[in-house]
Image 1 (cartoon, rainbow, N blue to C red):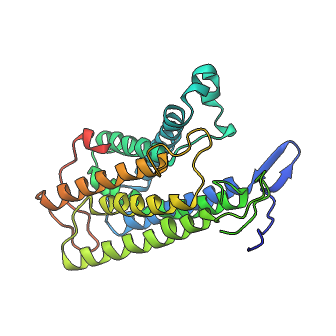
Image 2: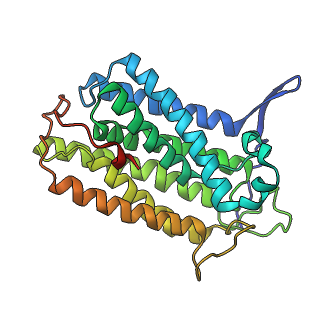
Length: 279
């Protein structure tokens, strides 16, 4: 058994206000992702200005929070939120779904692309690459909090004090670092060979995350209020399976669509995607 490094969840406290590691990790992930998006603008891989990028961030934050909260409320604890609808806005109480956040951000990105007349798949590919650091730092925040029931570690918040898998670290490495490297290598090779297609990275992200999350769910305890929902499968695995199917469908669309591939350092000149493909 490996001893859990007892890291206080609160980094610093000023009067009644507490700065938690969880929030700090997400903030770091945001800044790293922002830098990646700015770098892609400077390289000409996405047709945005820096001002457009700031606007995009606003769209994404709104879509992420609303989508994450709605999915959690509908899928994980519908009865709780029906009994107390006001609880829906109390996001500081917890209760967010990654899959819901992904759907919300996709819809928000589609709305942004339509309003700003930017090719949707350029935005989607940029988000696929820039979002993986957020996954890494977010899972590190989960680990510090002792969340998602982590490999022979006893977490302080676990009432049973049983040794468990540190699944947050598995996911941080797999979904954050490994997936980022895969996407970056895929983009570099595709652009170098002239085979890049807008939407390729978004499809690869859906497939990669879907597979990794499905497998790593076996090291996590299912949500207490749901348990296993289909044989040995958890709700997270069902949603990840849907991501996998969507990823392969998108990949088929990307590979069969006739679209101009960008030269290195130049954004693709492609028509905007229909709004309904954003989800």
